[in-house]
Length: 497
Image (cartoon, rainbow, N blue to C red; front, side, top):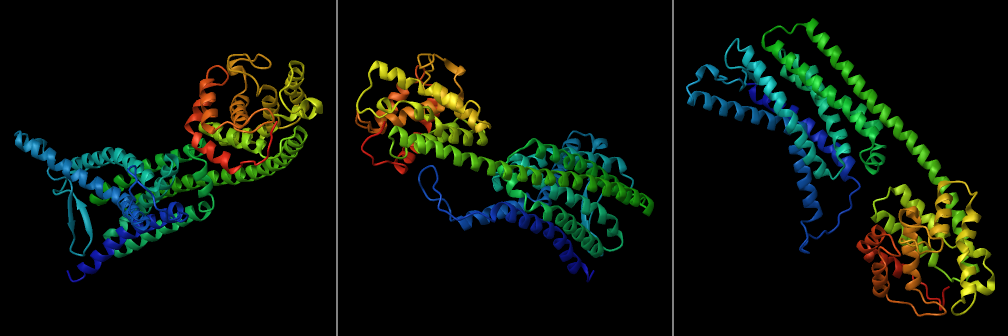
């Protein structure tokens, strides 16, 4: 018994090491890029110091680690057993008593064991293992749900990280489990070593791709990849239960262990292969997005050049196009459009007035209000803009063509061309609100600039007639951001057309 304290320390180490590795992995993935900041609660009171909040989250992660999960499930099993036995005994149904299915104890050599209290209770042990499996599944789902909230990640990302660690922990436990009969020390070292090796094989190629996965939440590829580790984890858990029963009954010989181990290795290789396929997919997507970004940057240069020419031609002295572009971006994002569509609208909206390039100078540069004949000429800038962009390649130019043609259309069909409702492209409906708001809040040769509140009131009053109600709602909910952008890109010129 003199070796018991030393062996107990080794048992504790075998529990703490996976938890600490889990903690380190999550710190590197989710907390390494966090910058401390003072946050306020809903009452305006400062929240605890960022370092204290981070410490609390790290403690929570320790409790949420696979070790924490197993401890909680084990405690739940013991409590379930105690409640059921108490009920059976109290009801006089002693023959149905589970008779202490789990009996945790420390052996003479210091090893921690969980054995049935009576010899030959294979049925009781099987019931315990089945009960353990049934209880562990909802507990696992709950742990992952809480884990995602703690690390502030998407569900798909949380499942990906947690299941990778849990799967490898179970696999390493199963590999080293039979060694416990010979030496708990060797079993502990083998389990910890196998866990670290498997985790390194997983993490080294994954570390550079985690940020991309975090930005692209819950992709179908990630969801599909998560399915295989979950299925394999269930199979490994069943294998671990089988290995445990064989060990208890002294039937686990080298042949059976080799078969179980070979099957576990096969499961591990298939899971790691699915991770590698995901990583390859991410690499390919990064390359595609890099090429796309370069193409978009080239298109943006062209768009900006056309926009600057249009501004100069129409007498606009600065930032009208930039403001309309930014307002459109805010509204499109508020409407929940995909990020790539938001960026597309931001760029394309810069060219909404490109048709003014071919409007006669005497009309375009006239000081004061236009006559009916002159206004009829001015209205043609929408069809001229559509013609100029008609054959331009690319999605951005196609969106720009629709915006140029339809940004003066009304929701009720009383616009320049009579297009009505959702027949008007969403990008044009968004740009219409952005363009009118900027026109109202800008000083022109024939009017003074309206205040933001006056322009806001007009926009909201014309919701459902001039403007799409969904667009005006997005405009309304993000009006504060609109005003900040208006101040940021303020132009001090005397007049605007």
